[in-house]
Structures are given as structure tokens and as C-alpha cells.
Image (cartoon, rainbow, N blue to C red):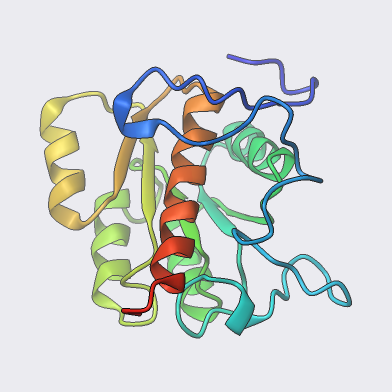
Length: 191
């Protein structure tokens, strides 16, 4: 695992064909493409203009919601996400995740499976059943590395399933790919 005290610089060298993002080695939070997450210059990072954000319809935020009950891992994931240029909200419980997603739908959710109150599969099902959040990409990041768990994640609507210990580059490549896909979906003439 990378040293969190050192700045993260994505290289775009994903090892899995399902997570090949388009991150350039010299891209950082100051040079990320604005088509992915334009931020209103007069507001803080959590007040992206909805019609410019390419996020979920009606979304005021264009951020990543990290749902992880281990405080150190939660902070580490959030730090990598922010260093890559994405605003980030962090919660440690399932009910808090549902409330945060309901109140201000994020552009993407990084979701642990094993949480103290609700498991990630139930959270994923509830997010998919809510019209306000049904289209939010969900990246499950968990220590459970069994095929049965991957199948359950697919069945409840997760877009990606990554395991811990995680490679920060792979996680950020996956996030970048999902965010770019959402931006392209919202720019297409059919949407």
C-alpha cells in the first residue's frame, strides 16, 4: 500500500482490464478535467452547480461518498480521493450513508460491505431502489474476496467490486472511469 503521507500521483497503469482509467501521470487535483467535476468558483467544493456537474439529476454535489467503518481506512480512502481532485464526504455507518446519499446524492459511492449497522449489500439495494440515487455508481471496497460475495454485489446493483488491501491507483482508476462514464452519459444527445 502507498504511503499516505506522500502525494498520490495516478499513473494510469491499471492491472485489471475492468479498471483501466485515463489518468495521466502528471494529472493532479489542480489539473483534473473540469468536465468531470466543475465547481462553482464562488462556492466551496460541495456546491457544484447542478446543471454543470454532469452528476445525478438534481444533484447539487459532485463528490464521492466514502462509507467505511474503520476510521483509519476511511481517512486514507478519503485522502486519496481528495488528492485526485474529487470532493469527498466520509461516513462510518450504513444509516449515515443512506441519509447522506438521500439528502445530497453524491456522484459516486465507495462502499464497504461489513459495517456495524447495515451491510453494504443492503445499503446498495436501498440506494438502487431510491429514484434520487438509483443511478449513482457504487464501488464496493471490501476485505471479502469470495466469488459468492462478488455475485451478491452484482445482484444488489454494485458497479465495481474491489478488495482490501487495495491499490490506490486501481481504486482511483475505477472512480475516474465511472465519473467519466457519467459525464459522457449526461453529454450525449439521448440524455
